[in-house]
Amino acid sequence: MRTPARLLLAVFLGGAAGALARLWLGSFTATVTMSQGSASLAELSAGSVHVLDSDIVTALIANLAGSLALGIIAGAHWPPQRAAWRAALGPGFCGGFTTFSLIALALALVFSTSAWAIIAFAVGTIGGIAAVFLGRTIGRRISPPPTAAAPENGPATPGPGTAPGRDPYAPNDGMF
Image 1 (spheres, helix red, strand yellow):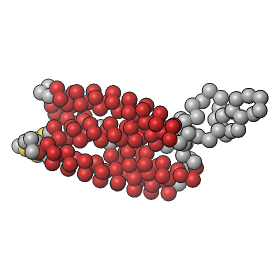
Image 2 (tube, rainbow, N blue to C red):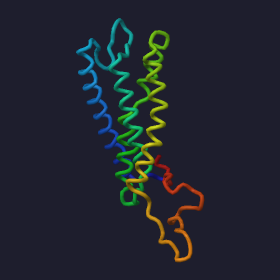
Image 3 (cartoon, rainbow, N blue to C red):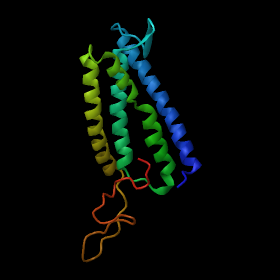
Image 4 (cartoon, rainbow, N blue to C red):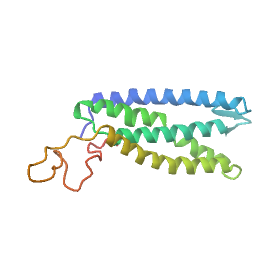
C-alpha cells in the first residue's frame, strides 16, 4: 500500500516543527542550567564528545512530553479527513521532538561514571510508557470514536470497522 504524498508531506513538516521545538527546548534547558556551570548540547573536547547534564534533562523532558502527546494523539478519534493532521502531529512532530539516541549516547559515554544518566534512562523509559498510557486515556476522553445508535432492546454496537472485542481506540491505519 502506497502512502499518499500529502501524508508524507505532513510527517515531514511535523517532524521539522518537532525538531525545531526540541532545539528550542535544548537551548532553554542549557540557558537555565548554564548559570549552574553546565554547557551546551554536545561539547567537543580533546577529540571526544561529552554529553552534559543539560542534554540529559532536555532529552528526558522531550521524551516524557512527547510520549504523553503521542498517547493523546493515538488515543483520540481522528476522522479520515484529519489523517494529515494526525500524521503531522504523531509520527511527525512527536517523532522529531523526542529522542532516544541522546540518552543512548549518554549511557555509552558515562555508563561507568554517572548514575544520573542511568536514572534518566530508567525514568525516561518507564515514565514514557506511563505517559503514553495516560495520554491514550486523555485522548479517549477528549475525542471518543463515534458509536452506532443503541438498539431499543440492547446495548450500542461497535462502530463500523470495529470487530467485537477489539479496542476501538487502537490505531487501525498502521500510522502508529
